[in-house]
Length: 553
Image (cartoon, rainbow, N blue to C red):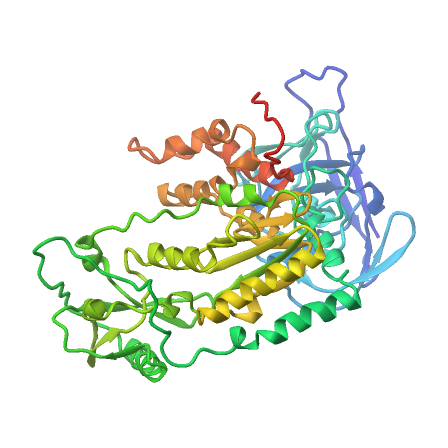
């Protein structure tokens, strides 16, 4: 059994600058019970009391809510948070945990080596896994006893102690401040309690997505079975269509020929393998063209390689195609009143478009062992997005803005009512089959009441931020340079319509991208933290009903 003897100064004058050093003494008995932990009653974890101080901290740049609790014998981290963030867990013996109300629970596993920051103070505690309710991390006596003499003022929620040859003061979160939410509560997306909350949508999706009756399920399967060819693996080249990719160069410009790069030995093997696969698929052929662009390998998330052609030199002398690319916000405005959704994703979309015969030679690329050219539209060409969007608009023109939205190879079908939705789905599948376009069934979803589309969650009730994208924002580390700031602003700016006064909040970060130089300060940190917090509490936006009168505030 451990005993903590604490002398706490709690003065009546809240403005008093000085407080006396309290004495901290920890007595440990020799016969400590193995695996026995004592922590406070978990029902009080989310609230301040006279024995605890709450802090806003960070782990790996990710905001977390921390409780310092003198009634806890060890340090703990939310088991749910650890699993969601993918942090490494070390196996430990099963531990018996005694709660403040006498209840006993068990836990196993610990996280070690994670750097925890409270302001500028850094520590690396061993954290036992346990379900902590509304708190991410609990720091108990295991950490407190390492600090030596301390000043604790419970009323002012401050802790001061000597560390690394200097006096450190940590300011807790005052109960009067705006309540902060634990990260694990955000990522777990509990059920909606208010209409404006975002985090119940994923659960709602699961509940509603499985609500199709047996009759509806049968009708859906009948429609899909009539168009099985739409989901079959493509074989050979796509057919000739009115829309084929053209590469128009500026007047009187000669052939573009860039010497190939030097490749490491293991890259050469991978390039040869992928070239053989493209030849076997009929996508490329041997070339004698005077054009040539180099090959580069880009590592994918699963550590495999993607072979890309560096067409930058060719793109510089290509005349741009000004075909309009849809604005996502305008696409979503069309969805008012819809309550059933299906999403289709085309398989290797660009490779379903032919290159014009006279322009095939311009796609030529050279590797260390050969010269090849594309028969279908490759990735990386300047006007490829415009060509593809133009083809999709032509194919679905009779249905656009009536029951279909198309953004490149992402097709969304939306309808009011089940019967209408089945009719619309069949029309779309018929057009795909008629134009020999192939969809990837693994990435498609049918007859849903909630659907993810272009980074948004869409329901009959409105549009919300996709929680998976919010998770990326929450995990974004503190930027170390201008590139990091631009990346963060690019990600959050995509959802700026969900954040009131986004431009004002982001201004300190925007200033860092200017030529004056990068200097991270308190204002930038505050804006960084506020944007993260705003995005995690983003509202569900209603879809506009254009039959009604709009009032501008």
